[in-house]
Amino acid sequence: MPSMADPLLITVAPTGAETAKEDCPQLPTTLDELVATAKECEAAGAAMIHVHIRDADHRPTLDLGRLTDTVSALHESTGLVVQLSTGGSVHDPLDLRLKVLDAAPDSCSLTMGTTNFGDDVFSNPWPFITELYQLSQERQVVPEFELFDLGHVAALRRLLDRYGLPYGGKVHVDFVMGVPGGMPGTAAALVAGVAALPDAVTSWSATGIGRTTLSVMLASLAQGGHLRVGMEDVLTISKGVPVESNRQLVERAVEAGRLAQRTPMSGTEARALLGLPAAA
Ligand code: KMH
Ligand code: ZN
Image 1 (tube, rainbow, N blue to C red):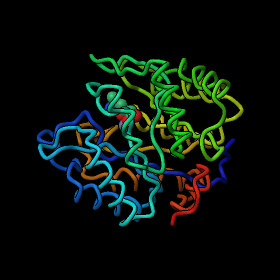
Image 2: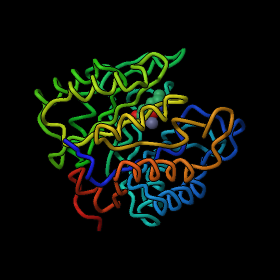
Image 3: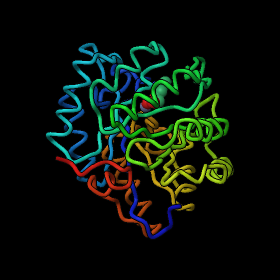
Image 4: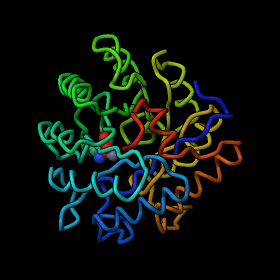
């Protein structure tokens, strides 16, 4: 389990699938904007990027050509671990979400159960989870297990018991907290989640949606965890003040980590943490 002295993994989730470009022009939605964001977030201290892409009209898409070009562009321009979202948007069908692995990312998100998601439902039935997991093992893609609820921790234990360890042999999870319909973004919920993790888990991070971002960040650091930040998860830097850029959120995470005596890890260190081979 992580300790206060461990290097800090900062994952940036710059775009997400929920915010419209017209409501937030600073949201990176084109490939050029995404690559520019990735470069500045890496320079600021991020080591992994969690990617959702958009189409020419800035709407969420799982277009395989675009996903493949995105993975290549991010690998060419940065040393970040590239994680593609298999969650997509709440409207994406399960078969297209499985096809995301055809774009050959380093890592993919893998959510451990269905959850209410505001007024919508984020669907992750057990057969989909097991199919995606076995596909990730076959394709040598490292999953990041997304836990939106405490029940998802139990589902992770069940998955590992039945299907063994992920590709690379490490088990990295991310608590996504404060989604309306999921677990609350509180220190108490994070403590309960961490205490319930299976022994096979080798690293964990946490992110709090919206106004829970700071409490989850501080609670994670207090327990020696890692951090995910980005405009997928929060659009204000303080009450009523819009986030200017993803870099600003990464810089804040670096500063919080510094207070906890944690130094941001590089992409190379993140690859080792996650059980990925060194970059080509
Ligand atoms: N956009 C949410 C419905 C993931 O990336 O895997 C799902 C999500 C999780 O963001
Ligand atoms: Zn996501």
